[in-house]
Amino acid sequence: MAGVAVLKHVAALAERVLGGQLLDRRDAESLVAVGGDDVYDLFYWSNRIRIAMRGRDVRFCAIVAAKVGGCSEDCKFCAQSSHYSTGVDGTTFLNEQQVLDSARHAAKVGADSFGIVNSGRGPTRRELEDWLAPMMMKIAREGRTRACATLGALTPQTARFLYDCGIRRINHNLETSRRHYPNIVTTHSYEERLATLRTARDAGLSLCSGGIFGMGEDWCDRIDMLLTLRELGVDVVPINFLNPIHGTPLGDREKLPPMECLKIIAVARFLLPDKELKVAGGREVCLRDLQSWIFFAGADSTMIGNYLTTYGRKPELDHQMVRDLGLSWHTYDGGGVEPAVPRPSLGRVSHTGRHRIPILYEREVLSPAPTAGPS
Image (cartoon, rainbow, N blue to C red; front, side, top):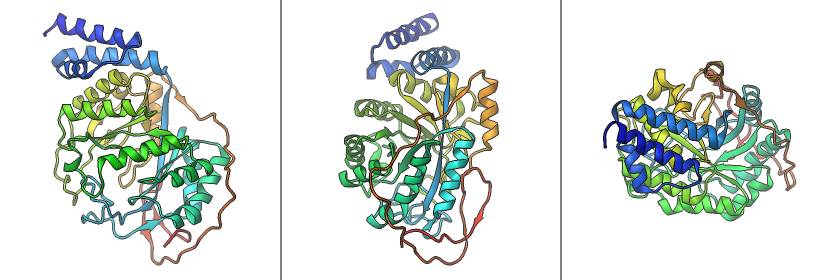
């Protein structure tokens, strides 16, 4: 197809989506084939779908890396894996006050959701009961943001415990397609990731799951992952673009060009019309001057502040970006959540030294040794 035929085809697919139909793999492949100047028409329609299905408000979310480094898993993109030499040495825990301050600051700058992120395959019982639970309960009770967590693999008991503590959304990314996954991770299976998402859903938790683009996958892999997420019924889909970390096996990969990033967002909107599409890691370094185009391409959400081991940009720049587009951002109005379990005792652990940690919104923080956290 070329010229007018392409434009008519994209418009016809968009009208089907707006009419409530779901597109299939062949439809998605035809969207991927759109190139040249026609890609702007693709963006036009992905933007129309966003407005019709998600409204004009955008959402911000924020995270804090509460436990950093020392991860046993071998995810080839990750600076926190103990398998690679990336400059992230050992394991560091933030204390309760640091996490609570980050949550309050997140709400202050407009974050709708706030996530506590832990490195590792999954939380230990001591981490959950003695360290995480008190922080999660306080964040949930205050009700300034939706309480979320990224903790790795979950058992049914762990998922129920998190819900009882006030957590309402779990992030657990698929990262890529089932076919490409063994090229990225070998220490745990794709099926384990799927099982964690199903376990979280069964416990009443909202699901946030997406992946990282630019890890050597092809468009078939990208479509596969998006269709899998649709089948799982996830609520939020983080779209990350690889920001190569020196020392990891993917550290020498070239970053995706901005227009390819935007096409990924657009195809995702056609396939997942009613889902929150959140552009997260790699936004600044991959999209560069086209960051504001993420909304025109179909995204309705982005991360504000820092990432796990890399820095984001100042929140006021994202505020200005949204205002300049004539949009506004949605703030959390869900109110506080009263946890359903008694407050556990707070365990303490002895740490020595000082740790350099990218705490939310700060460019460089030399934090005191944490006074709380599991050993």
